[in-house]
Length: 90
Image (cartoon, rainbow, N blue to C red; front, side):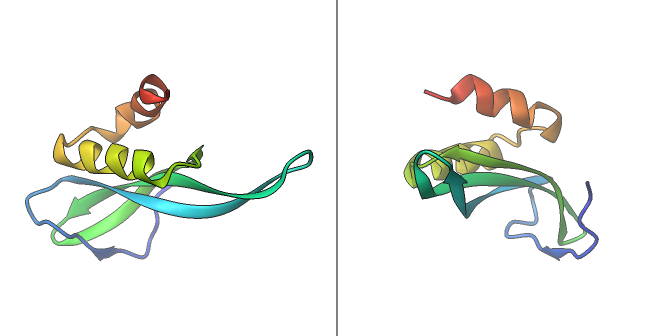
């Protein structure tokens, strides 16, 4: 789903940006916990539009930040976003 409220791209040379998000999740048997996900953005004319979000990837912030940075640096197509996350889970 496309987010109709654009924000500014952090790097004009990128077509795609990936950003880590922090969430509070809940499991009935474990209670609340902090998890991290990633949002995929399309950059166009200096604006960025959210294309997709994968929630609750890991409780390890550093791991999710590394994934997001790698996806942005390698300009991973959002078509492969879900598969790349699944393939890189420990």
